[in-house]
Length: 104
Image (cartoon, rainbow, N blue to C red; front, side, top):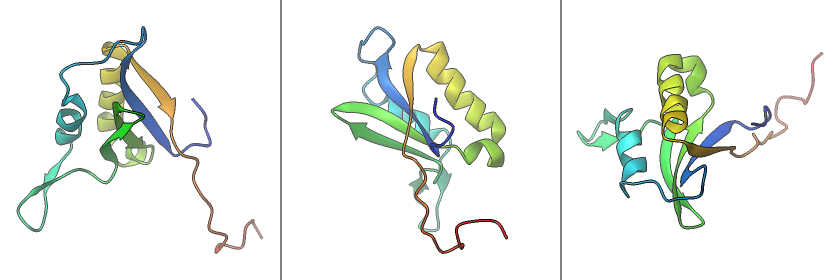
């Protein structure tokens, strides 16, 4: 995995390319880390989101979760490993240039 990405994507495909079941696995996995929001509705964690990419269910995990909740981060990666799911780096963090771009 690339160290310069700020996300990890757990794909709903096994290492041998089979679709992982059940079909709502991504929502269930994200539901483990969800909370009741201000509107008294369940909300996904800002660090873990279900998505569909190229027709494949995935879970995007923000790597900052490892600092905030290391046990939860380890749980997600263990889930992927235990179920032989494909894991890939996500987006590379975009720099907006407002910080001056270097150390002084």
